Length: 221
Image 1 (tube, one colour):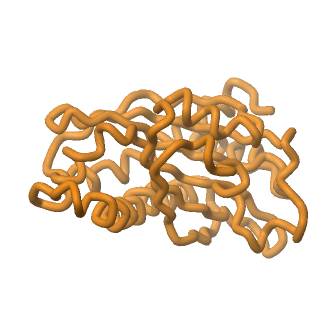
Image 2: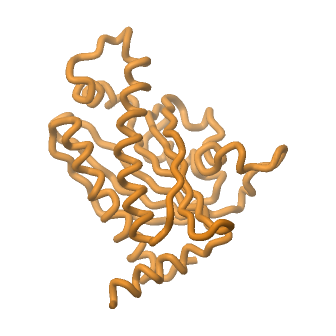
């Protein structure tokens, strides 16, 4: 779908977007954040849960935020931004975010509340920069927290469309491809590693190639 120049451009956009968001997380955990070069692949809708399980295993902790990049009233690109961690590494990060050790009996409640707030700040910063670089409007949805086995959740449609966007009784066609952008990150002082992902729906009416090509043209000018 995208040629090599366009792939490089969308990876640069994602890298810049996360670069604006990382200082927010670094300040929240009071530690340096390392992040690595972005990758890109095309992923069928019914492979999204497998992608997460391949990255993190069967026990994951994630916050996702659905969004629309709005170009006109009738044309937009739907997508999802995700902060993804292995469940086993959540405790030291949770303690850092909460400011003190969280007792095991409180972890589930505090984890959901804390990571939802973190995802709201981190992911919205990332997505708003993405929107600005693609010269679009932005409509974001409330972030959602999930912890468990990604295979237990119908994760493709759940992440990429709001319920009101799916016609009653219908599902997202399984052959629909998503642009899957990923940057791995680490917090060495907390012994935490994870990923931030952006999934963009390629079946929407606005061709994302056009938005990327505008970005490339602006860079050349």
